[in-house]
Length: 279
Image 1 (tube, rainbow, N blue to C red):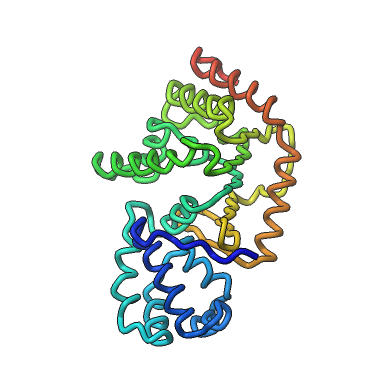
Image 2 (cartoon, rainbow, N blue to C red; image 1 turned 180 degrees about the vertical axis):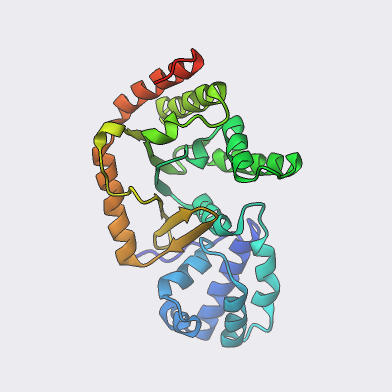
């Protein structure tokens, strides 16, 4: 098995902290599992901290400084790594997504964030926060569009999404916004920048009717699973749970339309929205 690659400490605060954590652990002669016992977490969690796919939390930073004789290094630096424009419950997942080599996602009620247009994202954020300032909404939209840059080079990230038809039928913003939004998803699929499948209404009951799931794979860290609800979210790295929901995604993909048929449906829906046709 190849060893972990060296992160560029200058690329981000989390990369710097991860690199320093690895060096400090190795200097102490501890394995990831042994250090995990100090933090009351798994060895894979330590590996994710070192790889920069998990955020350093203050309570872990204090324990690491004590266990690794690093003074207050981790306690002082974990704050900088935690700064984000994103909501707290989603920030860590978004940071992990930026490090992922593959993302598999099912969304029942929304077009996935990486596939949203600015107008669609603005409508979503305004619905979430009806009294928020325009500047804050502008900042949130800009941050979401920056995340979409992950798709500029599809060789860097495999994005495979299954979108419930309900997410495409709910008019978010207005019908002009939806025409642009659905057309954009179709364009991304047509340009082979992502694998897109639509789970149609006539597929009936399915394995993820209770919510969305996002699976993330990494080059040098164990996979992660992200659950999201109203104003809340949770990252999970338990191997059995990740395996279970990977199977859930596989079943969803099997029940969905093929990528080719999904593209036809997306183009038809965009035309319907553009010409004010109602399903």
